[in-house]
Image 1 (cartoon, rainbow over the protein chains, first blue to last red):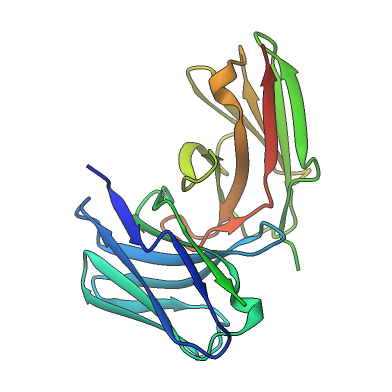
Image 2: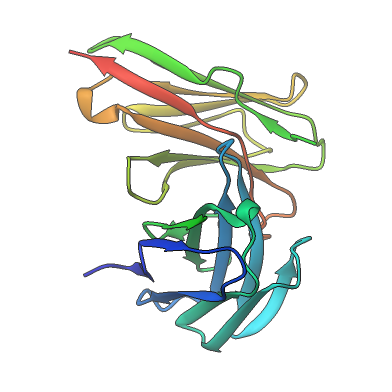
Length: 112
Length: 113
């Protein structure tokens, strides 16, 4: 029973398209995140939501829009995809206390 | 601006020996440090953490050491096992409970049987 699940795991698309990545956690955590791991392997936070409320919004182009319909789900929508958006996107959740994050398996986005 | 650095991209260690992974940080506001382990095609999993009020934390075969004056931490794995082969990420945060983690670029550890 997967704790943090993301779909799709792989996504190949053309520049200019719009795509979404979905994330669900069944751990009962209040806080969810999106992290991006680029080609240089840097794992950087993009967004954080606590109980459906946006609490961290790093310097991310506004083509990226997170949406949290409830505290168990955090989806990432990306408009007008660019080549530089190619990366692995990780969803994570936490209890919000210890810094211990539970990550999903990642979604590898390739923009051609 | 890379605030958390792992200068060794890879490390190979014989099974049964000690593995030592190093991490340096530049932001003196960091007060909580974590190590994550990542297998291919999986997300990172939490391994061990340490607060800045401590200089050592041990959990089974894993020990993390923190040297605040040098802004350096290390992860020791003793004895190393083949299942320890993975990429290890160091992470840091400021304000205990703030979940904004800053990660290093990882060290790929290979345990040689």
